[in-house]
Length: 601
Figure 1 (tube, rainbow, N blue to C red):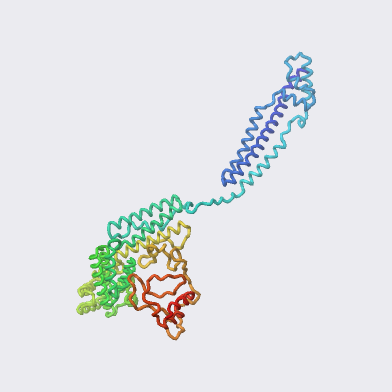
Figure 2: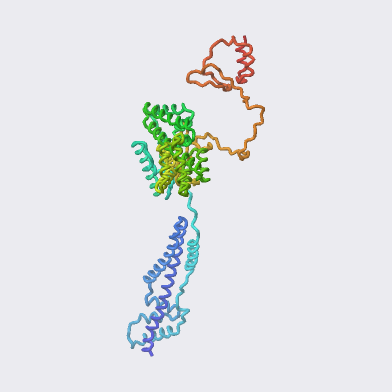
């Protein structure tokens, strides 16, 4: 019996010892897991607070680290066989029989050991598992579900808004992937230049624009970006004023004076004085396309005289600009007269289309290159549809016009050549090609083209400034300019305190604003309700010649004012009428009595 009991004791003990140790391991691992999850809440809160949302799920790994730490602690504090035996004796109330059986030396003939082992084996075989196994869950383990719930809430919670950091003005950074306005400024590298010096200046502006665009793509300080944009705009505005600048100013003034002497070119003179060469070219365009030969001849003579005056006064750049303008003028004039002669012959031959007649009238009415190009296009289309009989009739009309001398400016030989061209299909094709060339020709003067490119670059710089400020103005800095006649920013004058827009809004407008009014805008002006249009204003002006360097005018007196011109003559010699005039004068009321006393005889 003792031998059988001894053989059964050790397996039974090992079985119960394994159960006890596994539950102790589970308890320590749960304790480590609970503590780890509770500690994970802290970095999760920090990650949520600092808006590092991707770090929140990683914090759960601290729970696994805690469980691993609990397993390590359980391994290091693993119960020995004696510790387990003492636990089993305490739970089974066997008066340490199991502990004694574990500690007794071997020997099957030992009666005492046999009794102890038999008792221990009997106790282990009849043991109740609920009494023997250690408890796994502890109050501390309740932290685990609470911590898990907190981590889930933190992981799903939206991140708090980014804090608004107050920055000093200009310290904010700006980053723009596309700045179309600066691309337009960079195109100045391809713009026309009147001389190598201007070519170098335009290339430098283009390089600065490209460098700024590259820096904006990387990101830069907003204050620096606006400062560099302002320098670009100043450089472009200064470039528009380079014609006749410095020592060449006298030549520019001489040319303007010559243009002002002719009534035909007065508006062109004003445009040249404003450095608005596009507007000047538009004025010359209108005169060149007009029917009046006298105005055209006078305009050409005036341009020659102005160019000569500019060259004599030491402004060769102004002289060249005027000479180029004269060449463009002659090309426009030659085209307009050729079109008029051909249109007249086609109408006489009865082959003119309605579109052609309409465009011919538009040319006389508008006098623009656009109207001349449309007429050339319409005539080219009409020529393509002519039958051989119609071409022959048109050639005869042109030959008759050539014998008469053509119009006031057309060369009769040109009319003969056109009549000859119409006699063969190849010649007709040549004439059609010439009309297409006329429709596509660009007769704008080089200076006007360069001015248009500078204006487009200035609009681009303005649009880029709006992009940097985040204004998002519609169309600002987007797309190429419209060329001649497009809207430009005014050139800032020295001391003006900046430029203002057309409505008086913006810097330099001194508080003025555009008033759209409350009346009707139907284009009708009512008749003035008055007996006459004579002004009721009373502003007597002295007929004596004004003082050198001064302007004579009328202004009401002000209290505390001081005369800046010394008076002459005796006050006692004043006439009685002058004394009565004090009450009707603009002398301040506070001083009238004193002035009246001075005038008393």
